[in-house]
Image (spheres, rainbow, N blue to C red):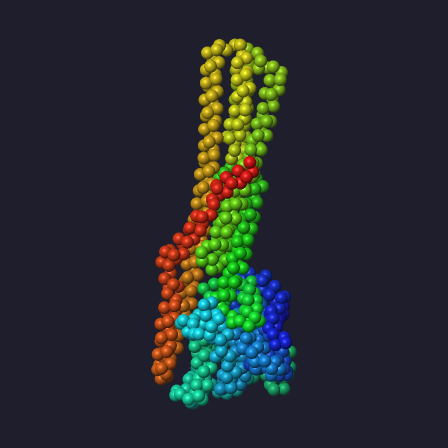
Length: 604
């Protein structure tokens, strides 16, 4: 992307997605790291010399990630919070909420110092439980969700506070401090009750609870006051050295520490999935409802899983085109291509799908592949029948001509006929690549020729009646032997087809199990990260003398632990509950052989 584009437009008091930006995201298949910048009453991408906000709504800039291979860095820039020109503070609250919902790192950009006014400008953080819900069960109520703030911590971004034009010394009570210590000091809670202390503590407590992972950067003035109006046109080399140093440190932190965007369940987000999320959240807000993480993920999963089935089918069909062009082929050859294409199709499905907890979409893919494979098996059989019949017709032409000429209608003609007949069968067997019906078509051919052969036998005056009976018995044995070969050919094809079905199901279950185990590991990582953050926050509260608040947080931590038990059960939960459901679902699907039988019956 050469330049930023508007993603969410804020016009006439309403938020709307910009179709062109959504289309761009939908074409982005890489995983994304999303960094949202909240500007406190100041412009973002559109640097300018006046105090008029230049960024309306949310703008987006997508660039290749400088350090994460096969990732895209998505920068989101918002209009300034508290913009006097908007005259509608509810837009600030929703834009703030969207920035949190969409990002993996949230950068709040303010000016001067972190004073009480700067903290109060983040008033919207105290309204988050009114504007964001984690679980669908509470999406329509304002009651606290089980696990409290810890539920939000799992899915909220890292928080970075950047301070522009910072001119003070980093000192507290005459002691040098780091930027992070300066931020933590600014977020310390006051002891005691009273409305004044309550109002002072509220935004700070919310920031501490919702964003336990916090970082601070202080930027000195980038240039002289005279050059500030021309800042957007200045070369980087002309900026203040100390400013460039902080900027480099800030960028390294963003590139190295910002995580790949994930959603509820630990699923990593691609650009396409981010487009779905933006659309879902903005449309929900436009309807006057509260965005819900779980509902958004479920809606996105439905769309992505359906697309994953289609993509898996396409991969399978492309993989089978090569062998289809060679029809007829032996069962082993089509089977090998099928298993390889099936594996690739399942991989493509797994890469795109998520939250297919009952395996419904995996089953849909299995059914689609089974039907397509059954069609190919029948097409291969038809090609084999056509080739074998044509070959036998061609090889039998010389003998048919000899019959017309009466060559076999003389004493000793039967022996000559048998010699030519055996030679013709030998030529047929020597012909390669006849496919899966070679023996069956030969058996039909020999049965059709038995009357002709018997007529020549009975007309041969050289043979005695006893010799004719011996030849008749010999012919019946040959026909029976060929029937056995044809039956064996069918049996081997059936066994191979059923084995393909079993291996295909086992492969799908294996890949699904691996995927679900990895998803559970990611959920556990998110859970432990949130838990550690909350426990550290509780410890800090105790050390600062806020025992009552620490006790409340301890209770919240226990509720959070209890509400996340399924995720912590890991492999046992997967083996005892999830995988049996998947196995039953796949077993309920018709096998390749069943589809083949149905297709064959229909065609007849």
